[in-house]
Amino acid sequence: MNVTIDSNSGFCFGVVFAIHVAEEELRKSGELYCLGDIVHNNREVERLAAKGLIIINHDQLNKIKNSKVLIRAHGEPPETYSIALKNNLELIDASCPVVLKLQNKIRLGFEEMKKKGGQIVIYGKEGHAEVNGLIGQTLKEAIIVNAKNDLDKIDFNKPIRIYSQTTQPVEGFNELIQEMNKRFIEKGIVQPDFIPNNTICSQVSHKEPRLKKFAVEHDVILFVSGKKSSNGMFLFGVCKSINPKTYLISKREEIDKEWFNSAQSVGICGATSTPMWLMEEIAELIRQI
Image (cartoon, rainbow, N blue to C red; front, side, top):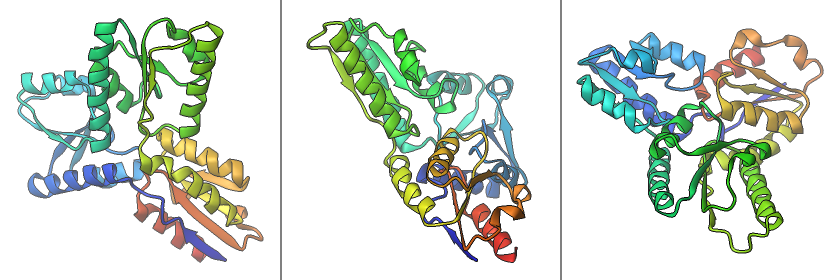
């Protein structure tokens, strides 16, 4: 049985950078606070916890003083930096450059919309760490949309600037834009003050077509991802739609040997939050089976 790991799967550069920064600091001090899971993968979080990484939430951040705290790739809203200043915290900022660029775009867009009486709309998952950082650039006034029904929150008679969470599917973003243009026509708005900004990370957008091709090439697909990863859940769905024999696992113990009955080839792939070492570990186990 042939076992192949998708060469395009694994950490995106933003996650690689955050983990590198964490490991460097842990080598020096042996202990480091991290605001939220450094990556949405339990196994990787456990690996770093063994080195001294301590995961905290925002409530705990308020109580910590005179310490070092890592900002993960998802980025943070301005209020986090204010708390750090008040509590004498040294922030080690590992925010993804793509996310930081998007935060700045939204902040500038918000200033423009305030002058025009317009609205900032963000296509993303409400409550997601990155989205929390994005709406923080708008004093939490941005409108979050994730499906066509959410567009009812928008006043189409006012200027609109829409942006996307970096890990959202391109197809979903395009569908929302089409629906918004349709509503402008239905409402008789001929020249709407509307600018869509496709701010989806290119590393994420390119994964979908590559995964579809990879899923076709193998009898069985093992998609390795933490259950908290929205990117992982979406990409798993992409693989499943192409190859019904696609199985979601987060660790080797979840593997069922019966999945491989009569299979000639097994493909192993994962999300932008899936470490390569974990996919390699699973590949080796499958080869033994």
